[in-house]
Structure formats: C-alpha cells, structure tokens
Image (cartoon, rainbow, N blue to C red; front, side, top):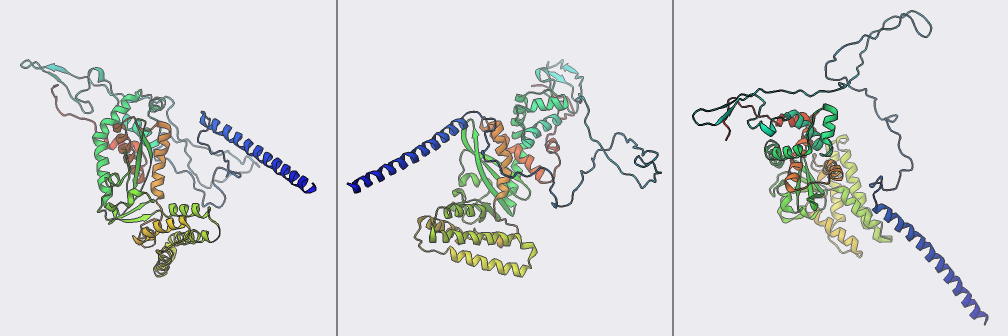
Length: 462
C-alpha cells in the first residue's frame, strides 16, 4: 500500500509540473500572439527590429579616429568681405595687442526668397499667303511646339534638379514638386515630372544608359546582386551590376541567366563576382571566370555549424577558418612581399581544395555543403581573390549599390508599369555612375544630357 501511495504521489507531482510548464508556454504564446498582432498594424517605426543596442555609440568623431579635418572653404566667390577688427586692448587683462596674422572664415547662406529666372519669348506668328500654313518665329531655348496649353514650360535645369531629387537623392516623386517650390519658387506637377522622365528615358537618358550597359562588357570585373521590386503591384526583380566605373540597374520579371546575360554575355572576359544564386551557375556561364562571395559562404557554414554537435561541427568550422584566413591574407596583400603573398596564397588554396575534396560524409547537411562548395572550387570560383589583384572576396559592392534602390522601394512603392521601371533603371544608373566617377552634383550630370531644342529658323506646323 505504501508503494502504491508513493507512485500516486509522484504522479501527482509530475502532473503538477506538467501543468505549470504548460501554463508557462501558454503565457509565452499569448505574448507572442499579441506582439504579432501589433506588428500587423500600422506602427510608428514599422522597420524596427525591437532589439536596441545595449551601449549605443555617441554621435560625432571619436578620439583617436584620425585627424580632425575642418570643413573646406566654399568654391563660390564671396559676395562681400567683412572685416572683423580686434579690440584696442586685451579683453582679459587690458594689455596691448600685437598682430600675429589673419585668417578667413565664411558663412554660406541662400537667398531668403529665391526667385526663378523667367525668360519670356515674343513669338511672331504668321501665315503663308500661298498655302495658308502658319509659321512661328524661333529662338534659342524655345521649342517648336511651345504654344497654346504648353506655352509656359520649365527649363532643362529645373527638370534636371527635379530628377536629381528623385533618382539621385531618393525623394519620392510625389514630394518633389513641394521641395522645388519651397527651395526655388518653381511650380510643377508630379505628372509633368513623370511624363518628362518617360520621354527622356527613351531619348538622351536612354541613350546614355545603353552606352553604360554596353561598356560594362569591357570591364575587368563586375559585381552583381539582385533584390525584390514590384511593377504594377506584381513581384519583379531589381538587378544591380557594379564595376570600377559604372553602376547599372535593370528591372525584369524574372532573374534567370537570360536576364543576367543581357548585361554580362557568356563570352565575358572579366571576372563576375556573385553570390551562390543558381542564375550564375548556368551552363551559359561555364566559360566566365567567377568569384563566389566568401561572406555568403561563411554565413552558410555558420548556419550549419550552429545546428550540429560533436564531430559534425568539424567540417563547417574548419572550412570557415580557412575562408577567414583567406580574407585576412587578402587584406594583408599590400603589406606583404609579392613572393611571400604568392607562397601563402598557393598553400591556402591547396588546403581549401583538400578540405573540399570529393568524399562521403555521415552528416547530410555537411555533405550538401561539401558537394556545393567542392563543385565551385573545382571551377576555381572560391579562392580566385587571392590570385587576381583586382578581385574582391565578396560582392559587397553590389549589395551597397542596391541600398538606395531598397530605400526608394520603401518610400515610393516601386513602379506602376514597365515604362516607369525602365525609366527608374536608366535615370538611377546615370545618377549613380556620375557620382561614382566623382561628380559633385547629379543635377549637373543630368543637365549635361538635357540639351534643349534650339532651332535656327522658322519651322512650319504640321
């Protein structure tokens, strides 16, 4: 009887413990359910990860982070020079002062009420006595069809500034008219900006975009990556291609090797630096030299290692160490003698190839990693960065060039149609390429492309 009572008592304790554990789990689930419901509603900070940094850094330059450089003087000539005279005597003790020299300081400002420059044309309107057709006078800067409802237009500088705000700075197009009016006093509508962008994307901006796309084939290397986009509310892909001289964007419905080969042909003579996407492993790219992003590979290895125990962790851990050694060696390229660097690089490549040799592993995840990485190593796509001096081990360049587009995706809801998507790709490519080549103003880069119509003689209307 005592033994049966003991069994019943233990069973009660186990049931109580089980009930308490279930109550704890239910409380956690209720809390998670409430959090998910809140996240589905409109939040003040919808992109917050709710994980604040425990010790956030203070803003500004930190001690020991290099020399403190002062702001450079403005390029514009000063409108006036004001003399700042020293007092007749020392303000602290009243002693006499002796001049040591002089220095210059500037304060840059803008006019309180900026006014746009308006050019008015007095256009002679005639008609032919023989055929009866109308003939209008012409002047530099006056378009042939600038009359009637479209008689009052804005100049190319205004349009260049507007498109620079949208495609270069990232201001949503619906807000650009307000920004322009606030800063310059020019009134323009969003529809006018959209229509002008579509027209120019098929003309001067489109021609420049086409040249950039063709020139990328001659680059010694190209970084490429992709991200999501929407065209008319449907899922699409925004592709980025980065070289040392250009940044090219392309929006397509699919991201296959066919879309990649629109920019990078199958006979490309440079090195293509990519992630492990299937599009880049197509047979059409078998003859193209590639470098797979080591950062992506190390993250894949870390994800597998975290789920393993015991000897199953060895494969991924050692592979990660080898790639980390490769990154450190690449960073030390300039500080090492060429012979020493080449010797270390050859030895490291041998160690990677040996670790990724074809063999059977007991763990399925490790076998999957071995098969995938081993195939890439057999093609020379893992450690090429220690051999070619201009090849980087990651495609971080492509990821960075996509960030402005990702921000634009959040604030502008992507593109309404394919024409708008093509215009976004063309304008953004021209803008980012100009900045990449040292342009100080996207507006100036666009203005150089926007050549206004300047007829030299009267043209009859059709």
